[in-house]
Structures are given as C-alpha cells and as structure tokens.
Amino acid sequence: MLAFRAAIESGEFDTNADLFTEDAVLHIPIAHRPYQRRDIVAAIISAVATVLESFRFEKQIGGNEIREATGDHALLFNATVGGLQTQGCDFVHTREDGLIDELTVMLRPLKAVTAFAQRVAVEFEKAMTRR
Image (spheres, rainbow, N blue to C red):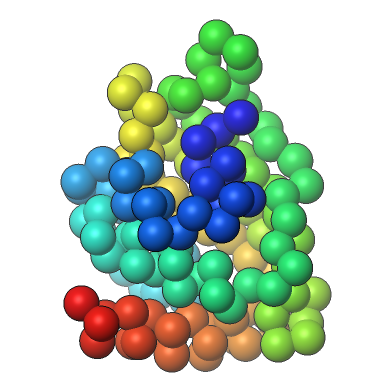
C-alpha cells in the first residue's frame, strides 16, 4: 500500500510532512497556482483532513508489488463536506526514494467543492497562525 494512503487512513497527519520532498508541489481545485514546499503542502493536507468527513479511499490505481513506492498512483475517494457528498481523486507521483514530489487533487461536484474551499481556507489560516 502507498505510504501516503496508509498515513491518511490511519490519521497520522502530524507526520505527513515526512512523506514529501522538500520541493513538493500540491495542485488543488481551490487554488489558481500550485502550493510548493514540504511544510506548506503538509499543512494543507492536515487542514483538508479536518474538513473531509467520513473519508474513505475506494480504489488505488497504479503501482504493483515491485514498484509500489515509485511512479504514478491514483487514489479514488469518497467523503462528505458540510453534509454534501463528494468524490475525488488524489494523483500522487513518488520518486525512486519513495517521497512524494507532486500531488494533484480533483473533486466533484461543484457545490461540494465550494463548501470544501470555504472550510479549508479557515482551517489553513488556523494552521498558519500556529506556525
């Protein structure tokens, strides 16, 4: 199982920074530009984790027993945000050392994405003031 998936499913958000390269890039549907740097990416992932309720991965595409830690992976998930059902996919790219250098998150439907954006903004602001 991909280390990122295992960390998210176990709720280990305090150590999620260890999964990313120093120059990691995060693309999320609520930002016009990607976020960069391990600490920022980790803070956003932690904020997202507090917003998405009943989160569960449904399927992992990519990787195999030999190349599990490297390459491209797609993790399909379901969750709720503000009582709205949402579906999404995390596209994860890992380097040879197993660290994530790029993560792209897709979400649908629009109404749930809007609720997600509002709630993540609040949680991210809280995380940045704690730094």
